Amino acid sequence: MKIAVGADHGGFFLKEAIKKFLEEEGYEVVDVGTYSEESVDYPEYGYRVAKLVADGEVDRGIVMCGTGIGISISANKVKGIRAALVTNEYMAEMAARHNNANVLAMGGRVITPEIGKRLVKIWLTTPFDGGRHQRRVNLISRIEEGKLEKGV
Image (cartoon, rainbow, N blue to C red; front, side):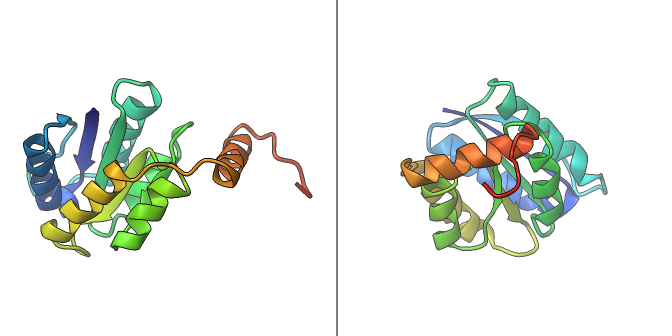
């Protein structure tokens, strides 16, 4: 599996830890930056990762900023992306199991690298349940396409 990772300065150290963890687990990693703690703008890195996922160049993406909020919002602006911000194990599981999230977002100032590694592992190894959850994911896609009508 090929995974893109990206972060701003607030998520840099978490990104480095997650990148090393993924490589040790045998995943192919595409690092889109940033490559230091120097201040940068998170939307650029959220977009870079999301675009790789949406275009099918990687299987999944992981984005990080200080809180994970801004970079997840940015990633979700790319058509076809379902970026889920997670802070605990249950959220990581549900992001995969119920939402079929293709991008995981975390905050480098919110969680430790050890917690981040656990969340990534859960997200990557939890299957999507499908069924009623697929119907809901399909509704999200319809919203994205501007095709969801009132009263659905």
